[in-house]
Length: 285
DNA sequence: GCCGTACACATCTACTTGTC
DNA sequence: GACAAGTAGATGTGTACGGC
Image 1 (tube, helix red, strand yellow):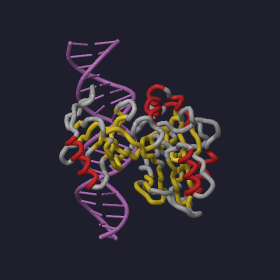
Image 2: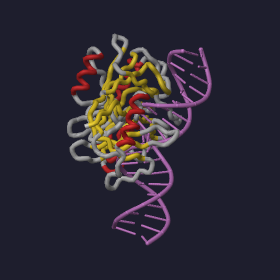
Image 3: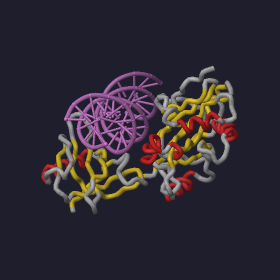
Image 4: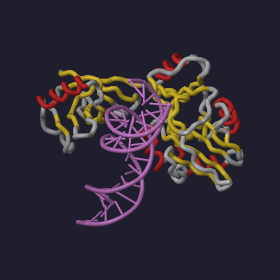
């Protein structure tokens, strides 16, 4: 029987991980959510939107073909580890085209095995079966649950420089789409950057273009989703400090500013450039 | 071969719409 | 009114293609 793609369960973003014995916690990896399907027609690997990326993940597909099951649907994340042993999103995108052997698939749930749809089984039982079917030391690995209290685990993950953690209800069934049975808590950091300008078009969200304060190098843009008072005050300052665009930067809808406005930006940790960034506040030098 | 453009993928948040 | 789900638009990188 040819197994069909199943839309993955999407965790809900929360500030802090949930406490209590009813939850199990895992490391949140920074990569591409993927689904491995193995059946009598072979192995296919899909993105979270159902696109067949088997050709891009050919080495992982080959390894999945060696798993000791007739058929299976495995939910997980394709990642690349950097020198520090942390998942590296930038390296992942390069590895997909050039360094297949750097790719790892971290399996965290099992939806189907040997002809049985097991999505209605409790999470812990699904994961027990999954753990048994994945050999140690390969590029397909099992995502181990982290023992201990949620707040302690979150603190350790933060200290280790990881992206965050995912908490899952131990007895939950697998349901496609957004779910509060899985909660993700991310580790953000807040840093100061120089403001290069504000990109603003009617009807669209505004972005603050940020630069490294030492080098002046453009590092990325941040959503301006702070309070209305801060947004209006920022726009006033931007217009007062209007200046020419930095060399080599062309953005027609951007109001560029002279150096001197410092912005506090909340963003995902562990990357040289800004990702998932939002402007919190600003000041003048 | 080099460069520019278009389009693919992923992520995120803000906003809108639908449901209870 | 509160919450969930869907949509829009931004980021960045890679690939394919056409023109020079």
